[in-house]
Image (cartoon, rainbow, N blue to C red; front, side, top):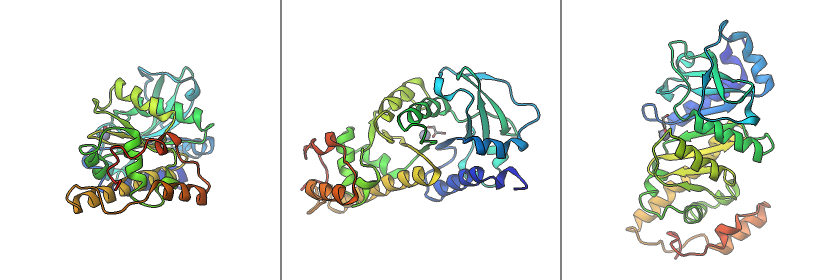
Length: 287
Ligand code: 2HA
Ligand code: ZN
């Protein structure tokens, strides 16, 4: 580890940005990623911190359970495709103060800048995911996933309908996200309203679709968070292709509710009952 880029959390973070770019999810400055660092990560990165940290910046949000935490964050307006080429100018490490209401940059963004415009949204969602997963969840990831976005123009913007459509688009989906996905109606990005709406969903879900915008997921590590984004987007792609290939009509056959229950049983996962009980009303893959 001769540089900060050899530190495992940095390597994992940078690789995940590149993986998202390769999938075509990060046009221009689209998307953002934050990681709540472990103590070990902070100690490994500390030798590379700035001699003088940035000034404290007060946020409009506050979280008791994130006092004194450190996060890696993409920079506002930065392009994810530049992260592996120039990490020191594209991402940063921020420290949260002992009130849980301000951050300061301790590493990165050497040419200037600040954390992602969605940082307050990520921050509040980290607080919720940390609480509801007993500290397990550390990653929040937002991407502009084209097929998920396309489906928000076509399906009713309802969690149960999206979840059923995605579960029925590929056999292992219900194992990967047995709780389903939430749906946020269209809102201005980066604002308090979308932060609040997403937070309400993240109490119950680890993924939320933002209508006409993209997808927002949480996970314990980079592999699981990326895998969740990838699985949901791939299911959305299959759903869109199946509907389009059939002229927009419901397809000839599908994964049935009984099939879903059998998968749940075989893999030992409990599927969200509210989604199972919703029925086929408005379900695009019901036939
Ligand atoms: O970081 O994707 O939603 C740019 C965005 C805002
Ligand atoms: Zn976005």
